[in-house]
Image (cartoon, rainbow, N blue to C red; front, side, top):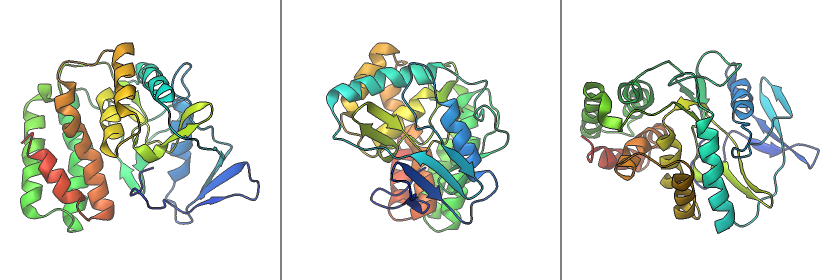
Length: 269
């Protein structure tokens, strides 16, 4: 789940058992932890990136094994890239597909994540990943009217041109909130936590890795591209995929995220 770098998310605390971690949110909306647990199970792909396994799920808490982190290494980064390609290739029924065993919307951090079906990525992304959070960010004052207009032009372009996201690709099985803080480096390799899992475009996860400076990112991307070559022009689309998390962070934290989103959007408007 996305938290502001350096911040603390959703009342995470250790359980009495030192081998377990309890994520607790007393005001959790219905299904808040159930959909996260469903996403963790769905992402358990043979040969894919290891994902933390839920121990127990409650209405107001999720119990997980406690992981011991170590320093990132280049070798672990390359293994992450190769395994992430396998996770993505496991696929999903359609854009916006929820994880298996779940019906309805999900969450990204404390915000609702629309899990609505789509066929063409560009208009689906505009409607279900950019517009809801642009509205929230504008309503909280994190995005000015002028900045909103810049992002709005990107939405218009995406709706008008289904090819704006590059060549059509199979729907990928996404972690969905793959920022640096949700990538845990352990002695056994990388383990992923806190997903907003759904069916989407594989470049979305890769762009999220780049947003908050994942260690050894160049090694991760090179290994991924070797295992599953990326489509032509993917580097030019990184900012487009980053618009969603930037708007989410603007809605949650304000600060400079609204300005950053508008600056990125100006490259695609």
